[in-house]
Image (cartoon, rainbow, N blue to C red; front, side, top):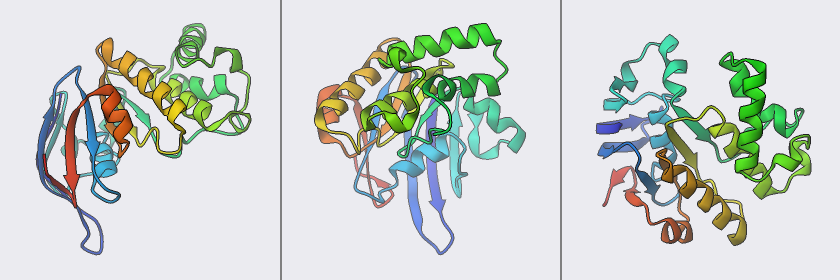
Length: 217
């Protein structure tokens, strides 16, 4: 489903975020991308979702060469993904329901079906009772749950999460981990960039470890 082959990523100024990285993630796997800050974890996720392009090598997602996609094809590729960012990227002028509704509106879902999906996603993350709440009124853990609901509302095949428990206490982090486990158990491919050792111990994923842009395990 996801295959990196001899991938390099160089940024302006000569920084090499990834160097000759090769790995494969099968459909339905749960994989953690681990490593120190600056090891290249976030870069792997951005390249997978075509947020950035590789400097060398190939990245194949569902049979498509991501690095060679024309710009107009990228939105169609991203329909396969649910994306969870470190900073949530929630819209603070919209309530929880409206935040989760946004990707369905963008993709042209019929209003009644979209509303049904939004409430199902909010229920899945335990926020159905707060559908009218604005993000500023939610705790950090609840904001993360809202971001997850938005990421999974269109039922993606692949869930990419960048440090999803980085700013949460142990209790909230464990709850978020169980959500990822539940998605994976129904066949969603889950790829998480993290340095959270407790989360890895709980979920027992396959680990791809990076050090200075190179795979070390």
